[in-house]
Length: 206
Image 1 (cartoon, rainbow, N blue to C red):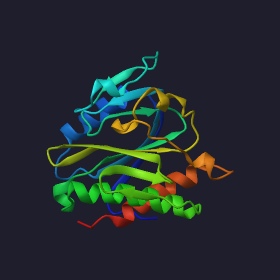
Image 2 (cartoon, one colour):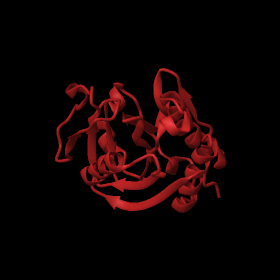
Image 3 (cartoon, helix red, strand yellow):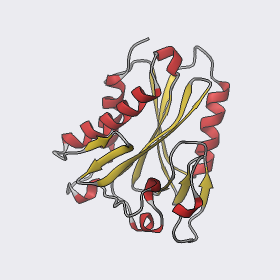
C-alpha cells in the first residue's frame, strides 16, 4: 500500500460544518513537519456554495441547509452514499501546482471507475469526472498558506433527487449519476482503497 508520507483518516459520517472547521484548524496549526492527510468522510444532507457561487443556482428552497464555503466552484450537494475525499496537502513542499492536484484527483476517480470497467473522463473547462455527459464526481479546492483544503465528492449509492433542486456546479440541466447505476455490488472499503491508492501513487516524493 502506498504511503508517500500521507496519513489517511476514516471519519465516518459527520456534519459538514464540523469537518469544515476541522480542516481550517488543521491547516492553521500545521508546520513544515506536519504530514499531509487525506480525510474520508460522508456528510448529512447539505448544499454547499463555493466562494464565488451565485445564489440563482439554487432553484428550489427546501429544508436542506445551504452552507457558504471558501472552496472554488458553485453549488453542489452532499449526503450519505457519497464518498468525500478531502486532501490536506502542503503544495510547496511537494512542489505541486493546483493544476497537478486537480489532475491527480480526477485521475484517481477515473482509475477507480476503470477497475469496475466503467469508462469515465474529465473535461478541461469543467472540473470533475463524467460518464456519458453525466457527472459522477465534483471537485472543489481552497489554497491557504500554500496548502490545500477540500477535495472531491464521488457519488456511489445515494438519493440523487436533491441535485434537481440546483444547477449542479453552476451548469443548468447537468445530469448527475453514481456508481450504483453501473455495478451491482458496492464495496465501499474497496472503493476507498482504490481511490486513495490511485491518488497517492501519483504524488511526487519529498
